[in-house]
Amino acid sequence: YHADVDWLDERDCLIHLAAQSLASGLFALSFIPRGANQVLPTSGGFDIDELADLIDRYDRVTFFVPPTLLRRLSAAERMARLKLDHLKTILCGAAPIYAQDLKDALARFGPRIWNGYGQGESPCTITAMPKAMVAAAASVGDDERLVSVGVARTGVEVNVCDGEGRVLPRGEVGEVVVRGDVVMRGYLNDPNATDAAFGPSGLRTGDLGVMDEAGFLSLKDRAKDMVISGGINIYPREVETVLLDHPDVADVAVIGTPDAEWGERLVAFVVARPGAALEPAALDALCLERIARFKRPKVYCVVEALPRNSYGKVLKNELRKGFKSYI
Image 1 (cartoon, rainbow, N blue to C red):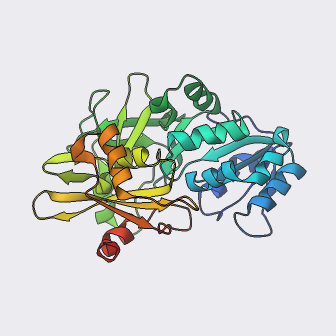
Image 2 (image 1 turned 180 degrees about the horizontal axis):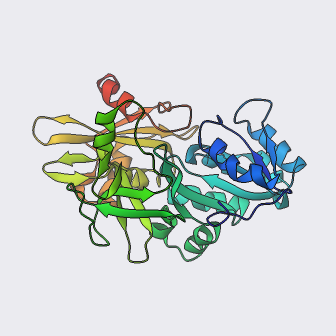
């Protein structure tokens, strides 16, 4: 943590907005030896007014949020009256983040946004995008670098591999594979799952990504979420990024569903901003303008909200199971 995020001492403060079994609790392991403050909100979770009051009360505050909650913080009026000099770092991760969300957060909070990538099998982070790098990418309009999850953290080796576990050249899409002391030894009492999780190059994360020549990793999607339509690989996250640029779109998730002709087709679930009336034709026109025709969704479903787990990740399996009820 000291090498990849911040140097800490007894003046620092970590506010926990989620269960200690998740990322916030793991980050705490770096704060405890330094004698830093640990603050558990009385609400037991995420409350914007309570968080703002705690930031105003304590100094050198750090906290962890997933991208959905970062978006809510950036839009919250209470955050405009924050004692900003009390805020040190906002740690972000656990789900894909979009360029506009990072730009909004930087506009609200300044160069205090850190982005990282990890999973339970390799806690807590695999790669890190330090605050200075996030701010620098935004300042020059480099959206591709801005939404990358950074470079391999200290003590971790990260490669992008093909289906046989062979390391791919820089710039090619493949599965992210990890080695290092933080990688698990295996799943408890489940040797079959353990064998499936490891390949010749290390832990298979199940995430598809690409690494540039400078070593920055960009995630394309979960391997299981990639859509193959007409024999062509389509990454839903790319389509989601385009749809989120529509001024009336508040949230979006794109999935693949079975199709007799194409194998799979794309379906977009879209949440409108308050007071907005979304028209599928306008969304389709935006996609036709920004991405290849074959990547655009065949169906647009306007919904009130997306199903999410307790940590803000969209439950795409729930959408796949019930998508017919939206059509």
